Length: 128
Image (tube, rainbow, N blue to C red):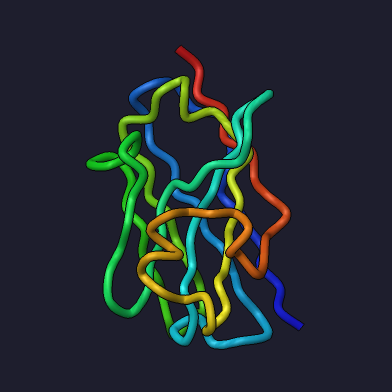
């Protein structure tokens, strides 16, 4: 059974940094596509960053500030978030696309309907 467990959320002032981690179990991280989504208060879930064996993709709103990476031996996905802004406040979710949906167009589009597995979410709050 595939499980994704996020950690690392918290509260930080604008301009600060946080690192989110997602521990995966039930499959090998390097064999699928992984990513991060977020859901701001009162808004829909949106894609933040994604990674596959051929590349990484970022939402325009986080380019240059966030970095997604994988630690394959630890089966862990990370999201380094720098220069945080109040508009980054959201519940952040770890996501995984199974092999059949692990394609550049799918993970670049950040369509939530293409995601096969979700974590439970971790809260990030950025104060001004």
